[in-house]
Image (tube, rainbow, N blue to C red):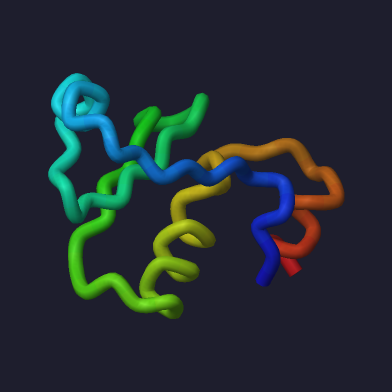
Length: 73
């Protein structure tokens, strides 16, 4: 599983966190489709975060392209 085509950021700003309704220990996935954002809840381990990103980084309806091929097959 690779996320080379996704951008990740770590935010220290309390103002930015407050503006996005995120807690200090919160992981948020922002996206430009479906609901626009997903908030991670649960124990943050490498496997649970990988599963969270993999599950939520694809739109419900997607074009059939190279990235979608790996998800579909």
